[in-house]
Length: 201
Image (cartoon, rainbow, N blue to C red; front, side):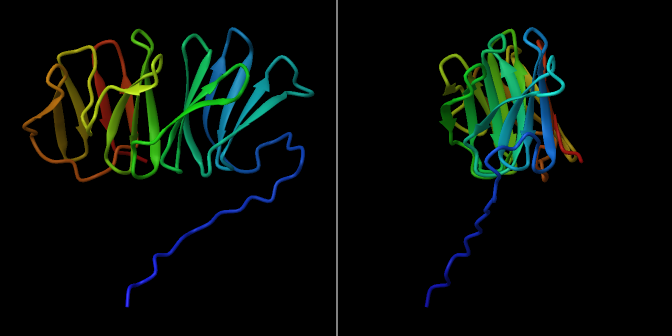
């Protein structure tokens, strides 16, 4: 007799108008040019606030995720917003009109963090599946078909608690590591010269 797989469902009983976040806020992005503040909520909603109107700040709600929104990134000069969620997806939004342009489904577990390379218009995503993917936000395509990642430098360093993993950016392959990662990536950064990731709380 085959064991039945357990399925967990979450329901949010929401009001018709919600001027505030229903739960915790995991991430913020501030558009200084237009005075917009984006908040990523544990209620699965991304909210946009007008910082120039403190009495009535809520502009719109961006609803398309089915679980916590863990991280958000503004890109393309504030035109697009990238979000990462516990529903295992990365979503690309029109940051002005608030609609979802694309859903990227390469991760197999919670997507925890994003990092943005402004000079290349590329975003990296990492999650509890220990996978890291690099995205071209202009074409909405993955630049890495596997769990490797690339950057503008020929070699990239990923810092973990139990050692360092190296990736060759031109061959997009692993270089023999000093030791193997045993933990998930919770944080990482993307700069002009290197890309680094680490486990932490």
